[in-house]
Length: 537
Ligand code: GLV
Ligand code: MN
Ligand code: MN
Image (cartoon, rainbow, N blue to C red):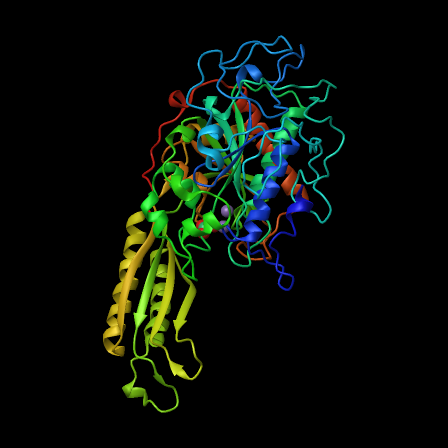
């Protein structure tokens, strides 16, 4: 599976990935996700915010290891909302009461698809299927999880050896889905996954490792003796990096209601294309963007596996760790305005050069962060008119700042803005500072985190400065994260790496964690508080 994903959006020269939200590369990644769902006979769903889901039917639809009668693998497109009954296999159907909600794909069309995978043809990567009742292609099972050609993540082996629409559970037994089940019926689901988009010239693992490992873990669960007492899903969150529209974790922020539909509609890329227009051009209806409590209400917990973006595990000599917390962080846009003029004829004392103010601000941010034990980065800048022989009229720089505590973060940003204004006064320029996004400190749910660490033999529990969908969703759900060792710690770069053996260890760990959660029928409300403040756009 990795071999199919690896070339998508990779720059031939530098080897970095350019998978920006709703571009052709992103759509190809999204088609890959859907194909993985179909290959496994999972129920594919596209939510109102462009997040992709691959559902596995829940409790009483779980594979019967000994009897072999009750199973959970949907084989084909099915009608919705018929409330159950008996199937041809004589097994009890899930959801014998009235189905909660409506049949989403019938009401919402493209934006909430939810059809059984494997049926019909698609006009585009995310278009609804016609539901022609055709069985899915052979299962992409990779029990070894050893990774495919090129040393990709675990689970990247070629699909082979399974019957269409069937998981044999390692015991040669076919599985047929209850035809009445739909994702809208899921409750207390165990969800795993990550994202497939990238930063500019990003690495192969940030995001895709979590999605590929999720499918690989599912294959292991099915091939092993896992008990599915809760529904299960793999998710690909849309636009996690925010590389194109400036706000990170757009899909999860929208779903959680911390990015409003109005705010999302106002987002523009560097060419002035709005997020809704980009979505529409990609075949996704943006009309229903916004909070999705119904969907999040189906989820009991979300566990995201991610490559570590630092060296803590490498320093400890441990392949897998568990996240304790995410530093508060945010993005601020600094607009430095001056006067364009001739580079060859304007005396230095006559200039109003915003580049000077910008350069001084970069140094100030670095110093303030160092003194506070925080991080501050100007990694993106645009210049007008952007001519070698003209003094700039506008320099726009984006500050990414992160700190161990919110008061420290706020202070670093305030001091940096103050330094910018003070310098602008001397340069005859003007500065405007706009906060584009802010994510408060995230403390991952304690009981879930501790349980996972115990399950992994007391794996190290580590904080991180990187933002994640699991962090955003921690405001509304119990969430947790697993980190896979990155030998150099380099990330957001083509040099990002994880050894194949560590990717395998990640799948092993994720499988063990998911198996424990799936075997546990406790509703989330008994399990976890939701302590985190909501991020803001
Ligand atoms: C996500 O990768 C982030 O920028 O923290
Ligand atoms: Mn990232
Ligand atoms: Mn990521």
